[in-house]
Amino acid sequence: MDKSEKLALGLSGLLLVIFFGAIMYAAVAKDIDVPTCITDMDPFTTDTLFQTAPDTYELQMVARMWAFQPSTVRLPVGSTVDLYVTSQDIIHGFKIEQHNVNLMAVPGAINYIRVRFDRPGEYMFACHEFCGAAHHTMAGRFIIEEGLDEPETEEEI
Ligand code: CUA
Image (cartoon, rainbow, N blue to C red; front, side, top):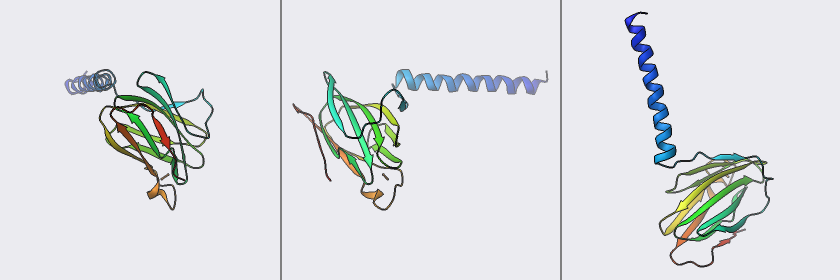
């Protein structure tokens, strides 16, 4: 084998090791999850918020032209949310500011990600997939409060 071939082969092997290391670093050290498509759950048609463990909630979010249901979600600081997103009509997007959440809302399918709210404040979520005339109005917010006893959701129709 030619010397330059050996070098190219060695470098490609090294690149594979670096890429694999980067994936493991993101998954283990940084605890970064990729969004998951849920296949063992029927698409829901209405929103739900309930507690599944101390400081842990399940939120089922419905997207449709041109609103999210619920549009406001109040949670205590330190909440972990198992977030399920689906759509009632066409494909929408779902992104939460200052959090590593970027999902698609797809009719007939459910996408899942876990998100944690460590700091108090208001965090907007918005549709990031162009979905028609009022796409730019399709947004809502998480309100994260200290000492909140009763998490709740609100609708704006
Ligand atoms: Cu829904 Cu853009």
